[in-house]
Length: 108
Length: 120
Image (cartoon, rainbow over all chains, first blue to last red):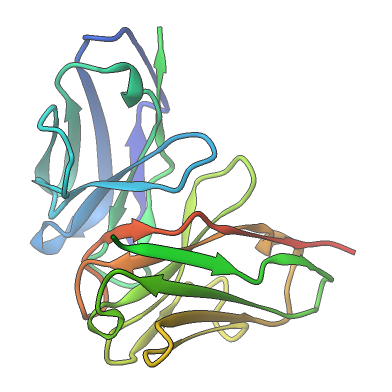
């Protein structure tokens, strides 16, 4: 099983600032089969990034993903008020699919 | 517009059973893999099971042998039959559409979830 470790657990930032979220895998995620999701309280998750760096439909370009192998990053270039939420990475390279524990981006 | 509507959640006793369903619309259901992801109260996301468009199934170890995923392409419906339920199965169960047809390519649409509570 591929274990995904996200850091930091909580990120306290102000609107307009840059957010950098990390996701580290316990073994290589081949073909960059890694996705990022955003979840707001009381809502279902929303796909942001797939294939480590491809934005999903209708996702603003302030969201970008990068990385390969075992180290992946989600960057939000300038935080908007609606971006404060919990973010999860997920690998879909091998079964079982696994999610990271999440990073909460909160307003400072 | 893609829509996924779950139903069938509720209260079940430990050792009991429950079946949750997900009716899909807005896309050609048979062409996409589908999955179930759950979230215990106040916790993170946990993948439960997936079924490919062709019917191949996959399960998390925590539910293997107790949960069965299936699909009825004629009814655009995904199912999760749960037996031998445990308190730790208590969670919101989300139905999710996969981007591709085979095992998994990432879940691009999610339902709003149905709450399953296992308690005596």
